[in-house]
Image (cartoon, rainbow, N blue to C red):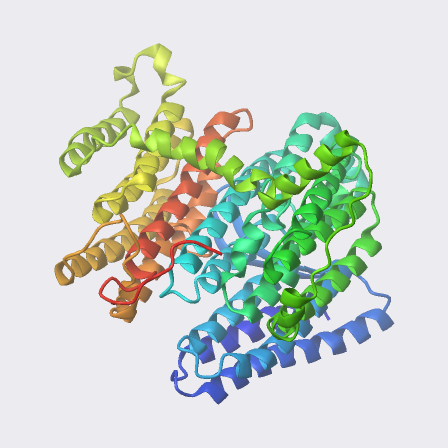
Length: 622
């Protein structure tokens, strides 16, 4: 029975690969492949579930699939099936089946018909990998696929300004959650001295033995997992991204942000519950976070003028309640609540366009004024204050902008003096000098030797922050990201012995993707006179193949699973010691901003309104 698990990944993968080669005009075949893929997966799941329940519903696991092995390092994919996976897979396969049927008519003759179904199948691969993951490495593979497919579906109408802008915003929030995942994975390696499998967390003695002697490490891992879960499930302070994600087609809004993707944070907490269930401070924090999110998003939902925004915030409010249920240990209730909320929000989003058109007259002509009862003045002031805060969505966007993005931009703008010559001259010299002194450490003053790895990592972080704010020279921004990877490699080499074979694996992904992207940018620069990052140019409308090649290069350079860069990044974290939290955080933030900067370059050049069109484009949301 264990061997059947991999079918739930291979069936969507096969469907996705087949759909890539179907011509765009063959709408019926494209939708039939997606429908058959989801239907076949659902049928296999129903049969497996029946046999699984009859046999006493044991926990199933698929033995490790080794992707890379070296001395003291093992990168494996591991799959695990239990009641949590069963519920999530059942809800996911059934809703994907329903949405593909709905979409084949809803998107009929839409320009991006094939692209939509390709992305839905790509998302389904990531979702299946995530809910069937047996360790953190496998979960992170699916986690990253969900992130990039979210961006592609939000920016589905890529000839418009707002969908692309909101797609970047949502992807950026997802990357913040990735920081939590990376740091949790890094410390868990040192806590267990191996790639811990989720099935091992069911062993109370094993977990208690490690947590008892490393209580602070255990709390830190749990809090990092909570950050990742909160970002993915739109909990405070990240709740504002959820309604912005509704810029995509209604079917993608239903399957992503009403039902499946938005509940992945709940899945992460359920899957790791056995790890943090005896850390009562963590349980209190999770419960309080869920409660505050539920109250705040409920208030915001009640004053929204857009039906999609109202449903989005209502869904976030329910997920806050599910967080409370998980914190209290009500696992079965949380699973039932997840299924109910997913089906309800999918239904509401799919019928919302029709509902608005049916009730449009009542909106205008059935207004009933409030009765003015005699209430205390202080209560009226509180009521009005809460109402205004809810209208402003509790300033959640402004909070993130002021305390996160503005900080990153300010640091990046401090190095605006950099140009090609200075990058090659100053930072190139520092990089070469760093690799030289790596083998001749006698030239480094003694008081600096213990801090060299952190200093170099911070220099690399400054480079990628400069790339993040660069608005004039795309090639410059691209070069800075490549150099940042070199600084990361140098920093880790100073920190611990980094084998030459490991360095070649890492750099092979960086340089191949970097070269492909750089020459694509050069070709685009020769073809177009307007070539900068100051606005969205929408060149994908004219250069579809070039846009696809550049997107692949961006994913390769960002360490998208399971590229050589991704394996190299995992190798890098295995060479950061347990007591080097600041160093690990610097590397994590550097890699995360890398991904945001790459997607920003791609979006600015290839997405958005085509620069040569004559029609006016709205730049503000209603």
